[in-house]
Image (cartoon, rainbow, N blue to C red):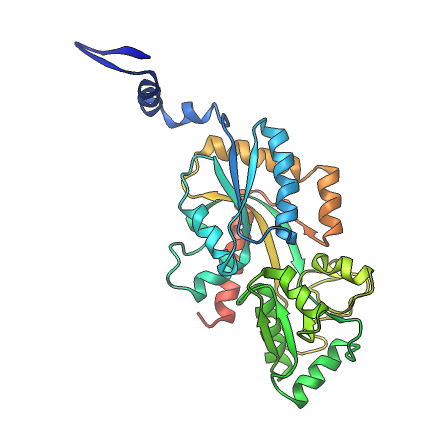
Length: 329
């Protein structure tokens, strides 16, 4: 179907689709944003399917879909300690139809480690809101001779680099936490990154390929409940970070030990229109008050923090500075 557009003395014959696009381009950005959302939203998760981040994202997106009245489709784009999916989000159009899961590993650690990334930190994204933080843990196979974290440290002291501890990926928060323990305790572990993420790291300790695994508490909750794994340590900043069954490890045990935590939230590409950000951040705050979602976060041992966009941005900027200091940058 063709239609005729008149602009002053000139008449242009064009297709209906082209005309619609032309009209949309001629409208102010806020006028277009007022109709948001009108189509499906892609939600990028920079980690593997089935992991704790993916499970959280799928529950979040289901609630977001209900709030906005459109489909919100999860796309797992894993690899590079979360950077591959984060790069894809960075390059998306800032129209609100591609958003994603933000994590301080790709946003605050990896920019210090990888100069080839096209983004340098949270300033290259639009923060929508925070979700919270998770403390790192260490668990061993239930058949292991190591009963406590001090046993692991003593063995590493006696034979450097022989105690293998799996982590979800190289350079993630758990990797850096273990490096902080090495520094404070004066030992050397054999830290083993897993190409398949946290679930692969857990599988490696279940198969006794490694001596221990360091992941979030939620990632080993089932295996601990079944008796296949034994919890031995949690790196806790405060009593609210503690989890039953895990021995708290902090600077009281190893003077100078810096406690690190995973933090997560929701982000979009830089340049998101203010009106679209308002829609998404308002929906985010509603989700962060949903009783079922809060129960899921508590079951996943989250330290819940429903930060607004500016507060979440400030948290990530602080993480960026802190990790940079640790990495000597």
